[in-house]
Image (cartoon, rainbow, N blue to C red; front, side, top):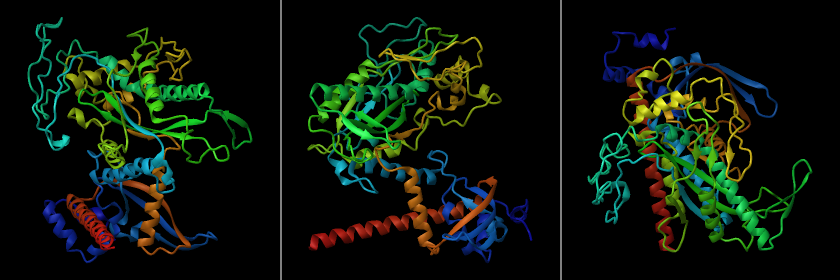
Length: 522
């Protein structure tokens, strides 16, 4: 039996078009298309080999076995599941759809979340990073465009100054240009030597801790407010039988990190006020009547202005760095009478950025290693090479550090890494310019989980394939490679997947139109 690679040895097929014709001319072409359907649109699918067994669900009895050698290409294809659109557009499209559902269900209910959460107070807040130096930016005082995504409005001068001087390094301290939206200078420092690249990568690295402390401060502020207004604590019994008295209000959040052009992250956060059910602490109940959305906004602004984190000492900066939010903290309410910010718009906005990484900076990096770091890091280079160099330099192995964790403005001991070098992770995340957190996170009780959505999708696929309900497929599989065997296979698979998606989209639109006509006729 010939192996798949024998079919594509040099000289058999020259060029992608020849590979497409060769594959399409095979007798088992239709079977191959059906076989690769689960990973059809993936840019770099995982290839697995091993045994697939049909097992009776109730008894565990093996009904039959099949080795992957009997399948087309002698392998089982599985989508890579990469969330980054720059790496795999198809898998990122699936991830964005799941992210939309996760965010939307926390606002309107559905998929196990009661619709009553739609009546809970919710705000949409944006937390930005502080300034680490002057950068070129685009500011439009008054928008007249139809959509901000394709804004062509006339912008104000970048950094106009009545007395335009120079910085200590001799660079102009002003910029009178009216930058276009695609101007490559946007986000670049006016003076690279004045810019604090080290502070920015440290801010990216510890921004997750700053957010954690900020949310704790918001909840403490609301708990104190409940005490002052005479709202009693709630008695709950834990799973271990222990009795606890907890504040009557809690904050559930969904958060997305977005990389700005200057390569500093900022957070878009949905904050929802929930109450506590003493009989079922996991239930979705509204907050007490005495706590309103105005109180949530007040608590948010107070926490954003007061909470800071001082990082552990570093040989380059023994006193550590101060990590705080920038001055621009924007808070908006969801589903108000103006209709400017709806749950659907917010969910789509967050889902879009959940598939991004550093693309906003104009570059997308893979994980960096000592063998290739010199190709990307340069202390005398442009903005991004200096940021990567700062990550690599601050994350170097050190043995003379004694740290006791970070401290916060409330005087409590921090929970940061207290290993010999709390900055060691900067090297691991140098390709992300210091940011090592997840781009989409949520509170446990905010909404449904990605796992639930994946399991639901897998169950739907088994139903489509007419798999018996009392039978499950158990695989004993081993990784053998990644990617399609040829460029021709990739073109055929991705084209077929695109056609299926388009067919489903048209079908959904037809059903929605039919439902609208039925409703109109009624």
